[in-house]
Length: 381
Image (cartoon, rainbow, N blue to C red; front, side, top):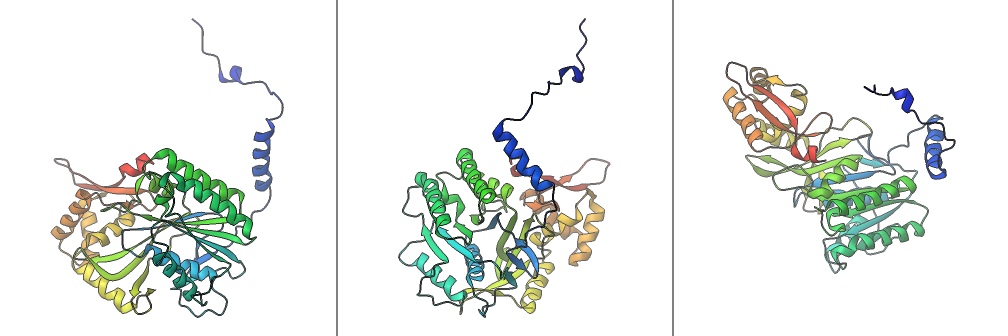
C-alpha cells in the first residue's frame, strides 16, 4: 500500500522571480512595511477623538427622517469653512492644514428646489454667501439617470472631479443604495465597492456614504448595506431616542464601528427649527429623556447595555440583578424586556462591532442563560 507523501516531497522547486505584476504588488507592500509608518492624522474629530481619516470609506446610517443628510451636510460645511467661521459644529473639528474639494452626489431630491436648498444651507453653515457658488463645493445629481446607468455616471463624475483640483477629494454619496440598479444585487454591490476601494487605495479620496436602515432593525439596507458595513472604517448611526416606543426630540449619534480607535460616547443633538439645522442638546434635555427611558426600563437602553454585560454568556439571575440595579426596575420587568429584545431580534453590536441578537437558552433543571449570537446578516456577510 502506497504511503502518503510527506509535505516536503510536494514542495515546488524555486522557479525564480515572481511574474512582474505580482512582484510589483509584493514589493510595494514590503517597502512600506520596512520603514516606520506615521499614521495620518484624522481629517475630522469629535471632542478631540478621530472619527474620519483620509482615504477611507465611512457611513452615516439611520431610519427614514432621522436627519442623516443634515448630519452629513454639517460635516461638509465644517470641511468647507474658513478659520474664522463662527458656526457651532457640535464639537466636530477638522484638520485645518488640509484643503478639500467637496463633491455632494445626490440621488433623491429634485434639482429645482430641494437639492439647491441643501447646497445653500451648506454654504451658510460654512460662513459663506449662500447664493454664491464656491469652487471647492461641487453639487452633482444622479436623479436624471436611469438606475442601470447610475454607476457608470458616478464613475465618470469621479474621474472628472479628480482632474479639477489637487486638493483632497471628499465625496458624499446621498444615498449610496441609489447609485446602482438594485441594492440587493450582490454583483452590482461588489462592483460599486470594488470601484470605491480602488479609488481610496490609488488616489487622495475619502468617501462618506448615506444609507437607510431596514425598518425595525439597525441593519443597513440590502446587500449594498452589508458590503458598506464590511468596507467602512467608521459607521455612524443617527436616530431619535425613543420613550414609550415614541420618538422624543432627542437625537443620538452613535458610533457602531471605528476601525482606527476606541468608539466615542454618543453625541446628543436636536433639530433646531429656527436655524433649520442640528444643534447640541442641553444636558438638561439629555438627562430628562434618559431618566424617562430608565423609568420604563426601555428596551433600547437595555439592548445598548447588553453589548458590555454579555461579552460572555451569563446566568439569568446575574444579568437581571445587574440590569435591575441599573434601571431601578423590578426583576420581572427586566425579564419581560429581555424577552422582547430576543423576540424582536433586535440588532446588538457586540464589543467587537459584530451584529448580534440576544439568545435565551432555557433547559429543565439548569439555570437560564443569556448570550449574544451573531445575527443572520453577519453570517451572510
